[in-house]
Image 1 (cartoon, helix red, strand yellow):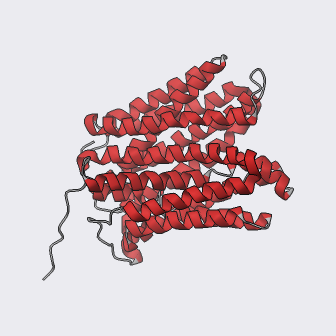
Image 2 (cartoon, helix red, strand yellow):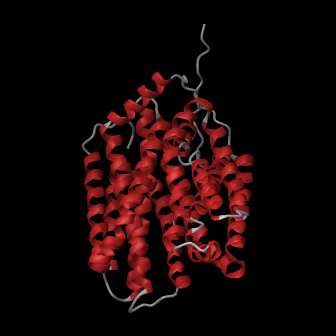
Length: 407
């Protein structure tokens, strides 16, 4: 006789467990994405320290994102067997520990190897965070909780660049790397102490047949395929805009220094607010209404950035950032909800969404250099505008896909 599975209703805002969960996942997102992008402002320092070319120094970023993207495809299925909480705790702890080793790396190739390994370690958090939220948070509050987690990743992406750049001015790249690593360690402690153990996770059979069945399910759902496409095009446009903005702001007529250009990333704070606000709106009005609205905001931001005055350029980036994180925050939570309602495979679906996310970042973000060379800012804006328009079309397509959840 089998013991019946008791499903808890899930945490709601105001519950002690909801507060612990929100703080822990905010800290986890902050640490993971701060460490992921921490070497970006240090590239000139790495060129001098290791006597490498600028293009070689960029490998410290690309190898981490490559390791993360590949490991995402493995981390999701692994979480279906060992559990969400275990994987997330060890992921954040390992990421912070490897960051400490990076700060002490004796050679260039050692640093590159550690950054690739760090990317692999990072995958355990983003691969399963949304699946964990879907299982542990009440369905009425899921979009809001997802928005708070994405807000943490937005703040982390900003903090990693700003703090590392400031510390590098004080003591070089090792001091900068060590400082960010210590922040990661503190966040890991918060995650270990506060993240509630899973109540509604039930291990899946570890056999390859079961995993293949679940993976096939999340690759056949037209709504999930559209959401993977949204991840690819939206982040591709977002990264292209910021890659092009560095060239635009450092050249005439603005001629901003590297430090001043880096301050532009403070508009990520609006991304954090945009994600949290969009989560609240999605709980109230539905995901199908909020995602297209976020796409329109991103397109408006790109249009504003075409203006010449510097304040309008910054305003355009801010509007575009708020819209992007609104789209990403709601869409990523939608993936977990859709997969869960379809019979499982939430870990695989979340992994495929984020794999698409980093694929878009690598491919379309890299094309921004060619767009800038051929058409200046107009070329970059055209690339981003086309990608955001495709994102909008995919979001509108979702309106016509039969619903499996309240969205």
